[in-house]
Image (cartoon, rainbow, N blue to C red; front, side, top):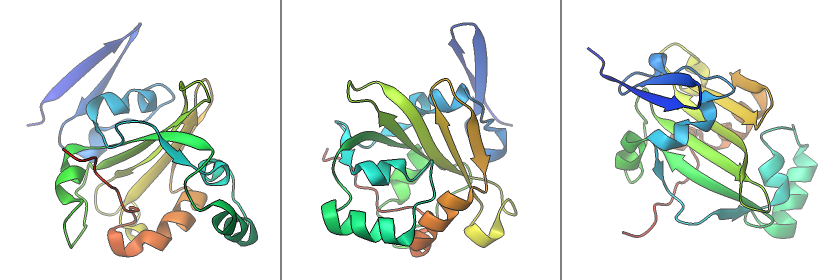
Length: 176
């Protein structure tokens, strides 16, 4: 039996199950509430390059990616907060790095003033959701905009480079 917790925000309710990915419903509002159920990995906003920050919404050419990496590395111009579900924290230092069904990785994109302007992330879905990419569902939404979710080609293409780590780039935990 799955225990559910309800979150009441303004005039709507979103329910998240505590144990199965199939119970996590993504919509334009719920993606902005996910961080309340996750552990924040970045004690302060983490800086990433502007081009890297835009990768969730565009399909950059290999030439643009190479130019951006050579120019700035992956850490300047835009700020993000990173969050993960508790099960991911337990597996981050594991040599196997096989995340469990229901694992959530979330990135909040911030404006220059520090407010959340978009969220992107991934949820490990039940076996069979996307077996070629270890069953990750990707999502991206801008505040007040539409939600893209599913087997998003741009996300899959980028995260394929982290296949040996279950499609999740290295996540650094803050010191205790």
